[in-house]
Image (cartoon, rainbow, N blue to C red; front, side, top):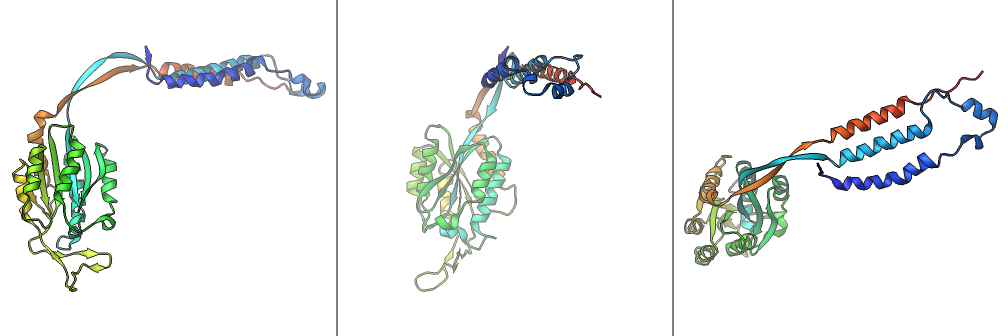
Length: 322
């Protein structure tokens, strides 16, 4: 037999002074009251003594502590094969991601697609980065999807968005997160920025073994960029129109990834997830050992209840005086 929560036994130390007080230091009430008053307060002798009741209470508390320590019998070990894939999701936070050609904005759609991605990729370890002119960490690799959703939902992109879309910085941030791994996947939620050639980015991804997946958000027609003070204008006062840059497709296709144009369907990103699964699954299986136990806590718990009931039902009846 072993205990899964042995630290619970520290609570037994608190019972030592209590047990001494209850069983050794119980002074007589006669010294506190006048004889005629004590006579009216006296109890019949047909029940357990006060000391006996205190001992029962102490035993009850002791067995509760033993139950909290979780006594168990070890029944063996079970080996379970699991699949885990590390994926970094990069959010483009440049000003162009607030264009109105995609409702309600390119960035808002990216947030929605991230939620769809988590819904269909439950076995993934996911990290989140943001990038514009430089990259930064939002969340490290984690399977706590609730926290990841919260962080992305409350990402204050307006306060950190900057001019320019530095895709290379996103690749570098992803590499810092996955440098210990041999199989790396990066999903970019972006409109492609303004760069027409991605030679440096392609070379960097190949050198570090990063498979790049691009989920392109935006339209060829383009749209204006919403800011907190209105539409973004250039130095001449003209409204800036930003377009989808499909040149970034080469970054994905030349690094064994995939390129996908946005849609309003909730299941479109599933195709990208399936491609990642097919390329990574054979490399990411691992064995986890699960210990099987038979719980025994209910035995000391039942004894605790029994001793508690005995101490309560043995309360003496007060003698009635005329």
